[in-house]
Image (cartoon, rainbow, N blue to C red; front, side, top):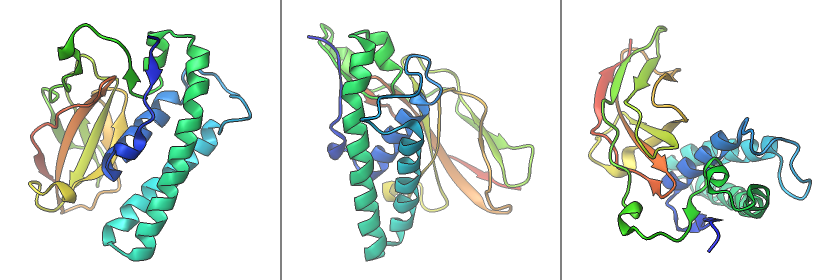
Length: 214
């Protein structure tokens, strides 16, 4: 069976949907396999990026549990999901069944396999480090490259790191190093964690690290 892109975004939690959609946008930005302009029947990269930005803002706004903000999060998620689902067939046609090309889209892939273990999640990245950045209010993050990871997801919290709901997405990167966070509050303590994202989905989180921003 030919490899296909998985578009079951409705099954993802809001946090995982934000991560996955961010991975896709990052993967398609400047992707030599999918040069613009794309077909007029699908959203452009600018429209896709704007839809992601709208959802990300709505996601963070809804953390307050305000009814109107939660409603906006849901409507912006629906809009972004619609764009991603309509884009998948176009990406598959361009790839012409080439798995190496499809992997570069950031979408998860559905394909036949003879090794059930290939569906195991990626392990947590090794060598996860967080250090003070060159500028006030910034942090630099890096880890050793993780085999099978197409990108990396970073989350942050100032609350209890043992409570899953306290974590919020803060960055997605195609590389394991040179990830910089800016705009943080000097004198405040932050917890951070990182995971890899591969063709079979998200991997395991690193143990969280705590650091005081200056």
